[in-house]
Length: 304
Image (cartoon, rainbow, N blue to C red; front, side):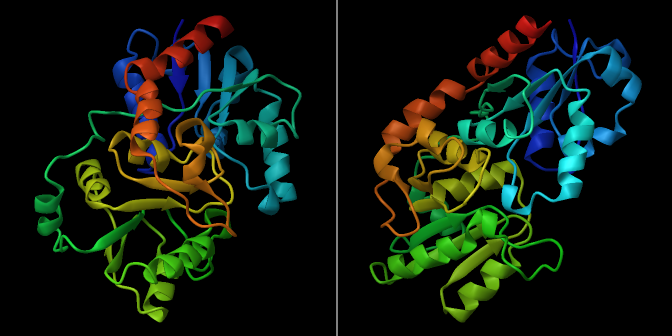
């Protein structure tokens, strides 16, 4: 049995998942669709690049990371149903996403969270020294946000599914308790957040494009990471924060309830809650490589 994974080619987290699955599962995978028995559409937004003849011939697994049902247009639905005719089973990375996908199909949906690569993300000792390298003082209270918050259509409007308005609301609450509050941003499309932080006169540093080594360092300088999304598949930031022992709180989205303590989960109208670093780390450790691949391997073997 050989599995072929489609390639988004966007230098995004899904490309990393694809590369890691190939690297650590060489006996199970092929980079040539003609040699495959199973086609894993890990990036469904580019599924039309795949030859339909192989989708008709092979078993097809399709991963949906999440669906934004508030913006799920007729065009989105038509694309889902066009792909659905080729799909044998669906894979999602969290229970909330399964509830979204099952609205549109009667086919089997399997929930398996993605793995976390502990060779990339890990705790770094001597936090004070690391902070100094980034120009932060030991007394600074650093809060991280590494996810896009701005709509690509105009690079101005907030991407509300990611909850930047919720993040800002919580930041204003934190500022009343921490006079040395500073925000650490990374990633693309942060225009909305940057403009609002400037309006609020909240200090921040923005590292637009960073590699994984740098990203791991940024997690390790934080006092708190906030996931404020309204809808998520993961997000992977929950596992990344947990495995680096970065204090994290999150809205109840994606895998939050599987990884974080209930006291670390908040809603918009509540206080942020309390990070539980040890609890989150213990749960995240279950998804480390190679253990994190086991459920995927079993899934494909059962399907074949």
